Image: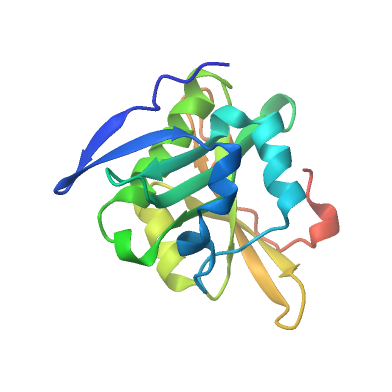
Length: 189
């Protein structure tokens, strides 16, 4: 699958390159992943995305070669539930507030529309993360449903499943909010 959106963009006042994530980037993204706001995963998780959805695993690179942020995405589902999914989008603290998260999200939206022909894009976000929820809402996402106890560990927390309808879903049926919460075991994908 080819995705034409990997290109050089002008983000104030410096040039940023969006390109596919490469294996050696796994050794270069600590400036992004060691931030408290970033969910991190084990190495096999990243390798799975590189091998299964390379077109949806995108990195933003600065002119000096440092990594600015990345999008970890994929496609999943079937029928009306066929969709793009944001597993992680994150920007290094030194590159925040430049519109880079929006650029990475728009890149996955375009991929999900033009290549996957998906109905919507979804993501999960901690229910307590008001800043991220507001950001996603400004990108056109809506709170679709609350997932009880989605985040496990020491701080069990609910998540919002947020969705953005794509052109294939003309009636925006995929984003009509549920009127009740669900549990993680009730998730379709």
